[in-house]
Amino acid sequence: MRFHVQHRWQGWDADGRLVFDTPEGARRVEAAASVLALGGASWPQLGSDGAWAPVLQARGVEVAPLVPSNCGFDIGWSGHFAQRHAGAPIKPVVAHWRDADGKEHALQGDAWLPRPA
Ligand SMILES: Cc1cc2nc3c(=O)[nH]c(=O)nc-3n(C[C@H](O)[C@H](O)[C@H](O)COP(=O)(O)OP(=O)(O)OC[C@H]3O[C@@H](n4cnc5c(N)ncnc54)[C@H](O)[C@@H]3O)c2cc1C
Image 1 (cartoon, rainbow, N blue to C red):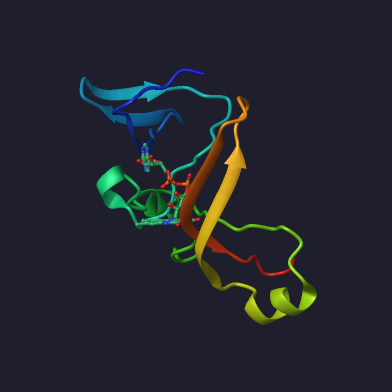
Image 2 (spheres, rainbow, N blue to C red; image 1 turned 90 degrees about the horizontal axis):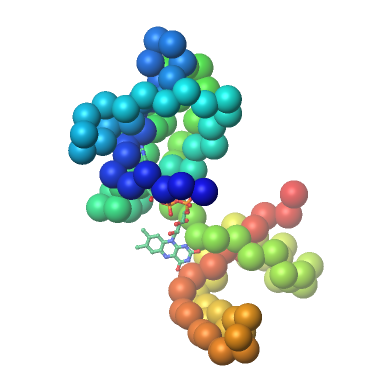
């Protein structure tokens, strides 16, 4: 994998190439397939500004309204709990895990209880 930092995707040109704004000017890239992982719109300071939505909409792609969301955790909640709280934020949550070297970690944040499919 190669990372190209300071490349801001702007959309496609008339020939279907991806167009990026870079410190060296516009860069065009031909790609057989593209995965867009551009986040939502709640953290514009770090680039997640949702500016991609109108670009896709202009090409006929249906985009659901952006809403705040946490990461969903599907860990076998009880039926009662899932039914009562599906779609609700769970906070605060402290996740504990052990890495490959056996070192313990803990991190506090929020989670989200997914709605049943
Ligand atoms: C203050 C705050 C606290 C949060 N706390 C929690 C929490 O405790 N628990 C939780 O589960 N979730 C939390 N969230 C939500 C969580 O951060 C997001 O749901 C998650 O980061 C989304 O991941 P993502 O990979 O989809 O997008 P992002 O992490 O937003 O990544 C998208 C990336 O795409 C880049 N990008 C966007 N547009 C372009 C473009 N045109 N060209 C090039 N690059 C582009 C952005 O710079 C960014 O690096 C929080 C969010 C905020 C703002």
